[in-house]
Length: 115
Length: 456
View 1 (cartoon, each protein chain N blue to C red):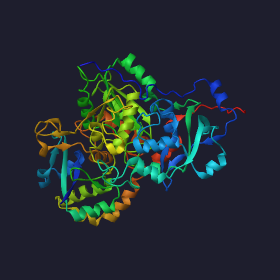
View 2: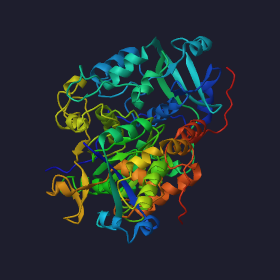
View 3: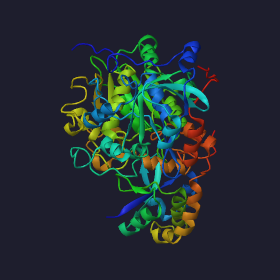
View 4: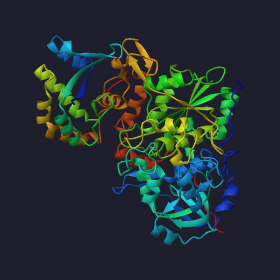
């Protein structure tokens, strides 16, 4: 059974895919207030993700959650580059680099600049 | 239907073991041997419990009628039947544990009074009634149950991944039993000070300031998303001839598992719900209890019942996976306990229907989700569009927060998110991590006034 990764689109990310075929694949949640792209992850690859990141887990919706921010960022970067949702192999190729970045996340995640 | 009134404290009387007069306290501690309180830690040194929190919750009456560290017969009774020697129900072992080395160095015996120091200052005493030894792993296992002995609700054997199991497993083997008395009243730091309503004070506020006759308690270890807010609003429709007058949020403050939110953000996040009118402050109040959460689902829900009845609540809402982590218990274990009882844990009937049980009334709730067809936040037992549901997943929200995405207000109120970011900027991290646990263990939620220990 496949699992899923949801990539939230804030304004900045949305601007990067606007006008591409990906726009049609946006899932609108909570009355359209939240946009996301959903990447399907075959079971053996989701197992690899769970093994790599000890906090990662499958939630009750079948989504892979509690993965490092660096992982989600990489998923979006690959989506934006390929203009496709078929990116999981590319992301997995970057695992060593993502793991390195994730180590730092145990200590520090930069807070957003909001008022 | 008779109108519901504030229930009596569990056990009939609120425990108050705080000495407020300095001269009495000084007489009590003169010449006592002293012991600086230490945290319980994991093998890698991560602090997971500080017994000072239990001493506070006992002496200020949150755990009434418990008055101290349990004697061996009482420990056995709690583990076997979830009852104190006085018959009143109580869920958890409450123990003052020291290592063999510390015990040797202390050189105390039954009948002695030991002065417990905190942050280098006198804090509380324990009047020693009994000294005995435990097997911490056995206590840990029996506290939470096993699939063999508690097949109604335990689904997996507890192990080292469960934070509550580890708290008991890492207890020291020597137990000093006896009543605690606080002799030097701590001062809470900000923001904890404005949410500190020990049971006697809370009951007074409910009766005289809020003028609530019925109050429903909301347990939290989380920053509230809109699903939590809807749970509070909908559960509060229970009551008697009218919905509950008040909603009392009681946050559990103490060491938590990594990935939970910092305590300060939890309190200020809930405060934002009433401060910005999502539930008006006339109907909503935020408080806390000091306790290093055991994540014991049905067992923890019993403690929540005890605490909130002592605080003056008439009802308690219980959701799915109440105070749970992982899949050790059935996701409805708490609702099973409060709906029909769990015989293997000593409850042939719900805890509010047994002798010496609780008076607080349960309100078991299912879940809330966003329904794009109803175009509203819907209750799972009402909404027929199950396939279209959009769930409020806590981990989904944590992911959004970590990425720095401002959540839409239908998911999390902007003011609640700002409370998260405020404390994120303080700790450079939005969630509990090792650094936060170490800092919290060192600083604690309180400071103690300077106090001399007079010679005998």
